[in-house]
Image (cartoon, rainbow over all chains, first blue to last red; front, side, top):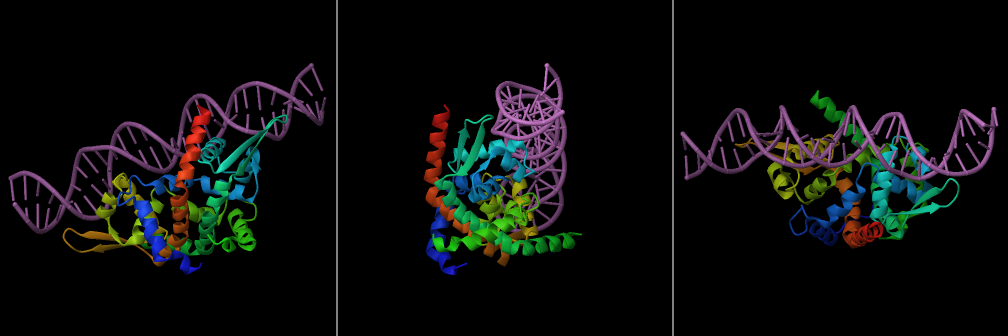
Length: 136
Length: 136
DNA sequence: AAGTGGTAGTCTCAAAAAGAGACCAGCACT
DNA sequence: AGTGCTGGTCTCTTTTTGAGACTACCACTT
């Protein structure tokens, strides 16, 4: 992580944007962040960043997602412009989901978070264990 | 965004970590990502990245969070090691919440996502409007 | 000819999570 | 003696999510 990236000017701009001038309730950044912070959204974006997938492929790839939530999460991602849905008139018809340019550009910073999670999941698990031990 | 950051090697490592070798269900990255992708988690981390806050201050800063969810989200963030909770024996006692080192290190990549959201929220809103118009 | 499986979903009902608001104890100030 | 501030918890209702049955169409097998 290049610490130059996180300079003060950028920080201040981020705070201004996210607080909307001190008001956390009506914040444009919240609108976007909450659209991609659902339980399955980021996971599906990560999968589709690899390559396009069909509906059934995604269902098998993420076995613990219900068909209902897969449908809905893909719908929401499509609505927000991250995902493109294309129906092929085969028999039976197949549907392919892929990232749009917007989706790919969003995946870039998301990937930073994924990398952080990869590097730090041990620390988080330890913190959890220590906290639970202290509570008992 | 420096495109060098997102090189192929990093990508492959991320995929490997997040898929856990093809299994999306038992994925350590999911464990971490889902801990910070709750509706309020990222917002509170963003607030605490600015400076420590007291319970009541956070409640006033985010007026549309219920007291119940504020308590619980702060508890979860504390459990995962992102947030430190300190009680001051004043009368009435006050409680201060602040980011730990782990929390600050997680905020760095989170900030990238916030910056992206700031830059692209217009595009997302336009995509939404276009999608809704096409459906009608 | 009838059954089997694969396509992408929808529909219904139960379970879990989140929101709304009352309530608590203790102290300061008026 | 009443009001307000502190940081919560408790209960009830509403929303979100999960589990699983059901759909229609076609290809392939038996």
